[in-house]
Length: 110
Length: 119
Image (cartoon, rainbow over all chains, first blue to last red):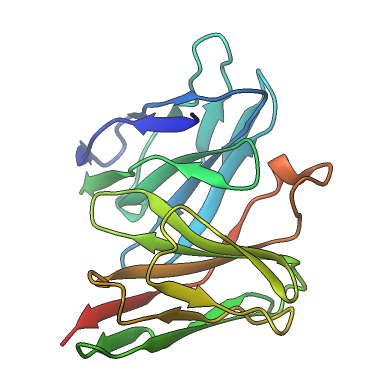
């Protein structure tokens, strides 16, 4: 079946550090891939998406590239800020529902 | 501004009691979803609806019920049959329905959630 695996957290970084959060997936067909962000006590917000192989999604300095050969969609940011502290979810969409990773908590220290 | 409104933000349930969580959207979206979120886990689908007066069970529908009498509203009832209801509940909507073209690329939009606890 379809599944999404994210790196376990929490991930703790200093401000201005480089961020990578790994996400790999298993899916039949040609899924779309998403990154969502959840701030404390809130719902999820779409961060970026990619709908086909080699697409790069980007938003607010975050980027992720849809790699079909490695079935990956890793999230990256060149210089993180304290305000980026949140939980990040990777998800795929291959039929009627989204399949979610477990989430990775990111903590940025000043 | 368009969006999804969930209420209440916090809810407490007594043993043997049914409680209803509200979800209203003014985005004119056809599809609506209910998810359950437990600590350290991803979201799990409870129910979804793609059209008024129709809804489908998700992966963990037991102990829950829904209705879709209006396009903008999709309330979730947590019944007394749900023995472990303590969780964060999220409602979402999407403009696309399955299996329409372009469905896979459409994101879901989320409300701010309802936290349900047991008294």
